[in-house]
Image (tube, rainbow, N blue to C red; front, side, top):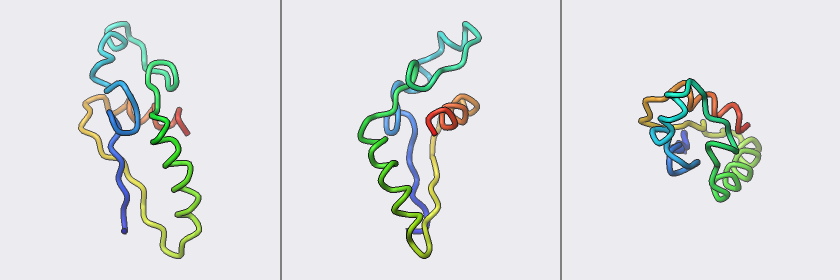
Length: 82
């Protein structure tokens, strides 16, 4: 494949970001590992696939797909989980 895409909400992590509206009302941002937890299986897949892809001659791009309206939160959480 040329691209491998992962969905965020309910695929890589839980809860879905729209469920954290109380944080938004309190002017807080979600914290990875506390407010949003990565599914163990998703973490394992990412930990295995990223090094394996790096060893290939033409590694596919990794992408995320999400229809969240909380784009800034999603980007921040991705950075936190790295």
